[in-house]
Image 1 (cartoon, one colour):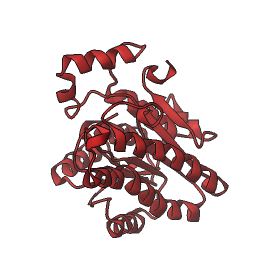
Image 2: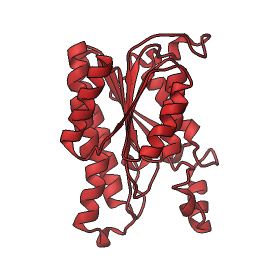
Image 3: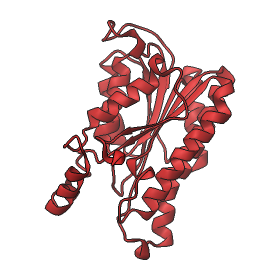
Image 4: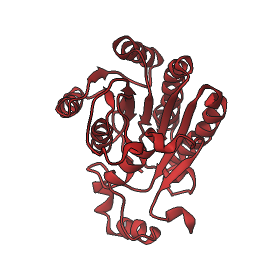
Length: 276
């Protein structure tokens, strides 16, 4: 669960070919597939991008931060994959559509969408302002829906595709000072099921990943609070805070042919937090 009041990033996967690592595990490969994704927390999505590229995907990057785009573009290009970097604000529907149009023009198809954008503004429920509520909802929910809608139209036309929404364990359990965040992630879980149901006849899989707290430079300040750090560790039966690689494994699974019969599912990557 990446929490921060930050810009948002996005990524898409598209079609191509070639040979890459892990030939001994073909079910988890995505040769020639094209992926697009957005997200918060550069290290997490950076690892997702690299792993999908290593397993054969071509990548489209969408971000508001041009330096992050260029860093990711170079790393993916070095793996021998095609990569397109697009600067866009995914809270603005015209920019979403322009980005999708550019991807289709460049690659002719979109195989995988990763909706990884999300923020939290930490406030007690009695202190949440309309501005804070709208900001969280615009990025965490509105952007997820309209990115999925724009890409979904492409996938319906090609009769295949995979959409992966990065949700949070707070879509299942409540955590204090996250009224808007919990609400948005619960809505993402329901949206995931609705899109999976509507688009299944078109050969489209829609799933979500719901991580616990993940160690990133953005969550690091929270864990400097010893009381909060103990609270998180004591809430995770497996006894450790999540790492970006934990989420990346789930992304690769849901993007690969190994998950072809999985749709409408919310995959909790929470170390057992929600089973208590």
